Length: 199
Image 1 (cartoon, rainbow, N blue to C red):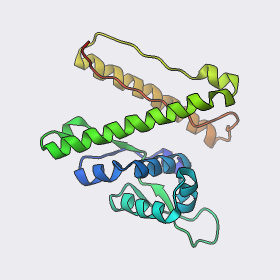
Image 2: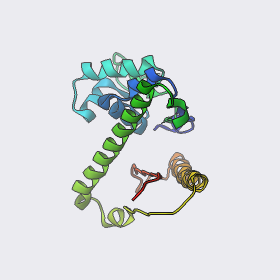
Image 3: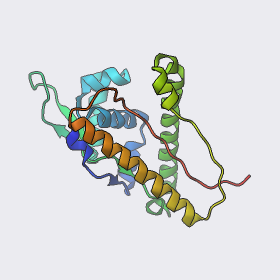
Image 4: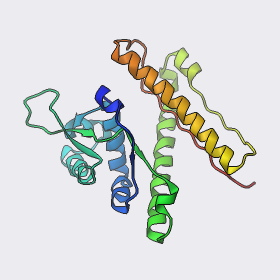
């Protein structure tokens, strides 16, 4: 995200319409791409997702209808093409907002599955391209799994502490970049899951 976007809070999504708007795979890809870029045009995003700018424009308008993105000031060019930017620092969903009606619960599950699939695709892409990254990046990357015995309260505490640590490093990186320290910085994906299971 651009510097001004990095300071925005996450938006809590609790309505079915917005959840359905985000549950479209292309829209979610566009939303993610906008967060990485800070702002972009339909043509720029179309190149990233390998889709026609007209189709991308349609889906951007759908995201805008739900207040997830908005028009941005043109960054370059002659101003004929619309620029878009996220309206928040991301989205968050909470289980308690989607209990009750079967349609709502199903939409919540479908969205969560889409996120898992897209995150897995991103990691698979890294694995396929790992050899092209410098050795220090390959060494710094991680993949681990732990099986713990916790209470629900302990799991909630663990998840909050992990998120606090991620936020700390996010802030450190953004502050350094704003000060001009951009050497060696790359986009880094950190995916955290903490959930119960029965053997």
